[in-house]
Each structure stands twice: as structure tokens, then as C-alpha cells.
Length: 351
Image (cartoon, rainbow, N blue to C red; front, side, top):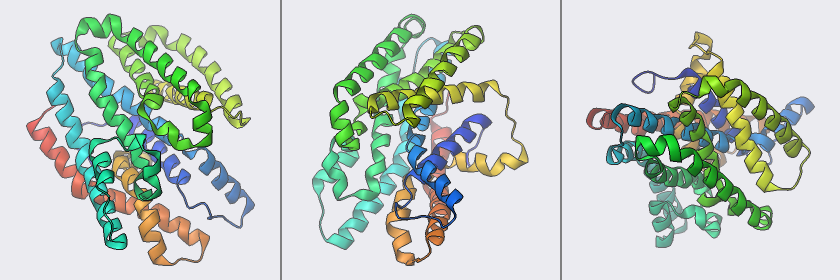
């Protein structure tokens, strides 16, 4: 398998679902099928695919908070330096490889180099520069990496100690959720006019913080006690979310909120159902394990590789995009991500 050590099957399957949704969302807009049923499926895939990023957010929040809560439980405090070092060795090498490749390619084609662009990409602030994407399309999806990085830096300082984790953390999460919702509400007009306005961290961090709530429930041994009640409440949320989304109520504030609540339901259900690594699931688990590198490289595949192939058939474009994204993403995972993970696990072991 791609990563060493034990794996949680349902998390890898949910990562597969997330990257699968995103791939559909970013498929070339002109690609259609002659078959009406296939075309309807493709249209639906494109429409809901953007929510795969929110699934990634919820999963990241849950996974990272689980790591921190386990360390708090064992030692009573956090080694923030080790935590951030481990996250950097996971996220930064593949990310900087992508940024270096795209900016170099862009320079070779246009003979122009924008130092301001480089500064934003190095400091993870590009999600606050909406105009930046007009000239660097293949890096537009990196806005989500910015939000995750900001989350990684913030989260350890919200937990810090066992006392804070037990008593104060749920209050902090509730305040952040309320704050993000309020800021989205106040920015709803701008978001409707330009969806890139919603790339800003303070408008989307709530999805990650919501994922941490499930880790906190496990930490407090509340999951079994609250599971049935939570499932009833969240099932009602799913129904409301379906009404909001599929009846096209033009309010992005509600849409973003209900989407991450919905994926909280999906996470709860996945945890409740014991999924074993049956051989039939191996391809999906493998793609889930490689999802980060696939996510990074799928748009460069679309923007650079597909045009070079000069394909006329829409079906061929679809096939080349999907296969190319998987092959390039997995290859870059083995070439860059995996070696740095080995370094991380050797010199900065998890507690």
C-alpha cells in the first residue's frame, strides 16, 4: 500500500469519494455524452462535485483533531512543534512541487514572472487574492490548501491542555462556527457575485472545525451516549440540506453550511458501519490513500496534458482526464509525497 502503518478503511473510502467528486466538478465544461442518461449523470456530478472539498475539510478536521486529542490523553499536553513539523512534511513537498512546476511552465510560455504571485503561493495567502487566478488557472484549487494550513496552525493552540480540551474546546468550536456563519451571511452578496470570495479562510474554516467535534466526542467518550440522539438530529439536517440544495435556494451561506453538516452525517454513518478491507474495495482504498496528490495534479492534467493530445471525441477527453489525473497524481505521490512521509515517520514519530 501507499502509506506505511495501519490504515482506517472508511477514511480512505471517504477520501476516494471526496476526490471523485472534485474530479467531476473540474471536468472540462464542454464535455458531453450522446447518451441522455450518461449526460444527466455527468451534469449531476458536475453540480455536486464542488462539495468534495468540504468532505475533505470535515475529514481533515476529524483526523487532525483525533491525533491531537490522543496525544493530550496520553501526555496531558501537546508537542506543537512536532505536530506542525509532521504536517509540513506531509503537505508542503507535494504542494511546492506543484507550484514550482506550474509557475515555471507559465514562465516558459509567457516569458513573464510575477514575484507577487510567488509570495502569495509561498505564504498560503492566495485564497485572499481573487484576481490572482485569472493568470494562474492550474493553481486555483490551491485555495483549499491555504485553509487547511491555516487550520493546522490554529488548532493546537485551541486545545493545548487536557483541561482546555475537555471544558473549553466545545465552546470555542461553537463560537467559531457561529462566527464563520455570521461572516458568510454578511458576505453573501459578494459570494453570489463571485464564488472565489468564498475561498477566504475565515468564511470556510467552520467545515474543518465541525469535523473536530466528532473527534472531541470520542475524546470525551460521549460518542456512544450521544450517537442515537445525534443521528436523529443530523438526519433532520440532511433533509433540510436536501431541500435547500436541490430546490436551488440562492443562498450560499446556507448551502455551504448544510453541505458540511451533511458530510458530518456521512462520517458518522461510516464510523458506525464496520467496513473491512475486502479485496473488491482495494482500488478505491488505494485511490483514497493517494487522494492528496491526485487532487493537486488533476487541474494541471486538464490544462496542460489534455490540450496536447488534441482529442476530438468528448468521451476520449473524459477518459484521458480521469486516467491522466489518477496516473499523474499517483506517480507524483510515489515520487514526492511518499519519500517525505518516510522521512517524517523516521525522524518525527507520532506519539
